[in-house]
Image (cartoon, rainbow, N blue to C red):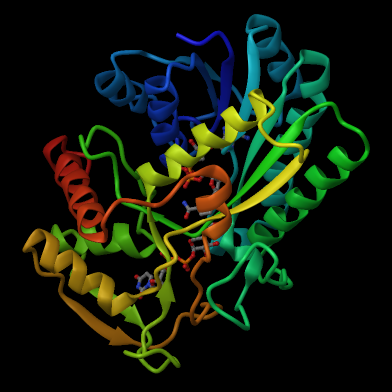
Length: 345
Ligand code: NAD
Ligand code: WQD
């Protein structure tokens, strides 16, 4: 077991829980802070079943500075932070902007404030391909232009990147790695942890697996008249376990001072653009389960096509999104079946 503890905010959430598994399997002691606003305590059982280790867990809100101070006092061995804690529903952010700005930005600022006095060496931040908006050219590199955000959620990611940059440039003693995720999908291959959508899913894969399960009547494909080969939108779907592994590399890079740079930005994607219709076909091929679907009108605000150039993460981090799409589709389906088995969905 390593001696440097990693604080994982939002660690019972979708990407956080998969990252905790990878951290523990790499030998890092972990403490999770989560307010359970979008996750369930039972996720800890899943993590324990996979790794044999139950991560330390603090149920608290990261916008509560005193709660964070208490946490650092209790765990003086925290040397790295991975900040997943955020509100993430794009549509909700249009109706509740203050909630999004307050939750996402205060969480980040509280953490940044407490790093130096507590001897924390680095912070990994969950950013998003949403910062590129509708790109002029695909695939996008980290140098592609940042487009004006179209939602308060997206804006919190842009502002967060700026806050981190300003704090580091002001001479902070710590480092930061900003990771821009493309579209994380799938679940742990053990089906012990996965995505727990709240209510009717807005994202494609949970809606698709719920339709395949018969929970939803049919999947609506939002538009087949885009300027793409089959007319449906294109995204870069990245397996959540591949994504999780990149966080271990990123945190290690800061703890071991492997880079001269105090702040680094990486795209985390596969480099492969997949259309909605191709994704449905991949799911059906990989699982043998049919997905009833129909073409409907475009969804307001949708990006036509975006996929990553992940060369920097490949070269500098030595990381690649290795999982074949069909395996990811099978893990997403196995997780949906597990939810049914447990009577959750
Ligand atoms: P998630 O909702 O499953 O996980 C976030 C976790 O943070 C939840 O467990 C929630 O309870 C917790 N949380 C929220 N606010 C908190 C607070 N103030 N204090 C303590 N805990 C809090 O989301 P996810 O999909 O795992 O996303 C993780 C991060 O990655 C987020 O920052 C999100 O914006 C970012 N991201 C996600 C995607 C995606 O498509 N899932 C894409 C790009 C970026
Ligand atoms: C994917 C594709 C839809 C549902 C969102 C956020 C973004 C980032 C990732 C956090 C699109 C189509 C969807 C459905 C469909 N998150 N679709 N029928 O929109 O790429 O990005 O998650 O940072 O900020 O905006 O993801 O899963 O909603 O959609 O046809 O029922 O599937 O039109 O082309 P999106 P998504």
